[in-house]
Length: 115
Image (cartoon, rainbow, N blue to C red; front, side, top):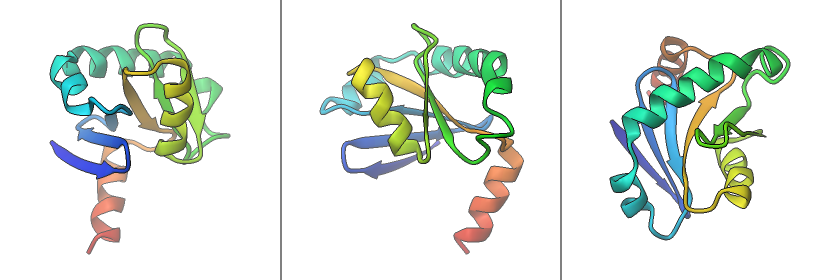
């Protein structure tokens, strides 16, 4: 698991082409209390059900999904998707996915770009 920090955004990259993200002053506490496994599993299920609405026309954009409400927020960047999600669900941890990319493709691209 890799942790990246941005201003008020923490991104936890996990396998299976997903990210668990939260935007809050209490980020560490939210992540500690969150059931990451549940968020990952439920978020992946929700994405599988709704991805036909977004792929391929929104390929390369990001969805932040709240697993409790099953609402998805679309953004050009993960930060934008999270900001939209945060407006509706402050202090939550979200399942975030890049539309149209599988984990192998995303990891290979990331590795190549960071060389």
